[in-house]
Amino acid sequence: MEVNFASMEVNSRSKILITAIAPLIWGSTYYVTRHFLPMDYPLTGSAIRALPAGLLLLLFTRQLPQGIWWVKTLVISSLTISGFFVLVYLAGSRLPSSIAALIMALSPIATILMARLLLNERITTPKLMGGILGIIGVALLLGGFSGTLDVLGLVASACAMLTSALGFVLTRRWQPPVGPATFTAWQLTAGGLVLFPLALVLEGPLPPQEPVTYAGYAYIIIFASVVAYLCWFSGLAHLQASTVSIIGLLNPLTGLLLGILLAGESLTLFQGLGCLLILTGIMWGTGTLRLSRTRA
Image (cartoon, rainbow, N blue to C red):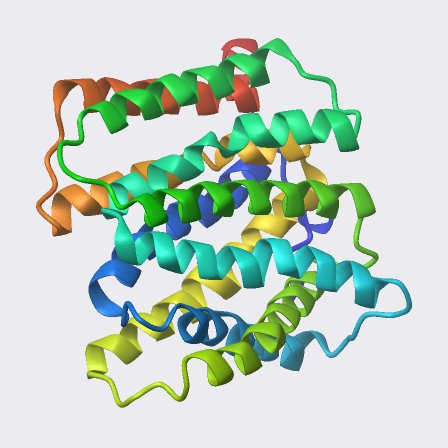
C-alpha cells in the first residue's frame, strides 16, 4: 500500500510526475466544492473529506503513531488537514474556482522561504526563477478576471496557502518514521477527529442531500484526500520541499481549466500567457528543462 519511490526505482522525473497528480486533483476541488457541496457546512464538509479517508487508509496500513509522533502528527495535521480543509472549503464556496486555485499558486515562494529558514535548503536560481515566473503567471491570470471577489474567501485562500506550506515544510524537517501511506493515514484521521466534534457542535448534523452532493463528497474523499495526499507525501519523502511546492503550481491550471470548460469562465490572451509562464516556471524550478537539455 506504500508508494515507495526507492523500491520502485523510478528516476527524478517519475517522482515529479507522480507528485504532480496531487495538485492536478486539488485544483478540481474548488469547482466541486462550489457547485456540488453545501456552502453552510465548512466544518462538516472538511470532516467528511478527512476522517473516512484516514480510516480507510488505516485499514490497510494498520499502524498507529508512537511516542512524540502523536504530537507531531497532530501539529502537522492541524496545518495540512483540519485547518487547511476548512479554509479551502470556505475559499471554494466563496470564490470562483479559478481564483481560489490561483492564490494557492503563491505557495512556492512561501515554501522556498520557509524551507530556507527551517530546513536550510539553498535557494537556487532555477527554483527562485520558477517561483517568480509562477507569480507573474498568476498575476496575469488574476488580471484577466472581472467581477467582485469575496474578501473572506480571499483571506481564507491566502491562509490555506500559508498553513499548508508550513505543514509540508515541517513534514520534511521532522521526517516521518513510516511510509507515505501510513503517514497520510495518521494525518487524515487526526485531522478528521479534530474536525468531527467541532462540526457537530457548531453546525449540527448534515441534513439530507441530493445524490449529486454525495457523489461530490465521494470524489473529495477518494481522490482529493486518499490519492492526492499519497502522491504528495510520497514526493515530500524524496524531493526537497521547495521542489514539491513548485509542482504545486499545477493547481491553478486545473482550477482555471475546469472554470472554463464547466463553469463558463472566460480565458483571455493574458491568461493564456500566464498559463505558459506557469508551466515554464514548473519545468525550470523542478529541473526538467535542465534534464531535457542534458539528455538531448
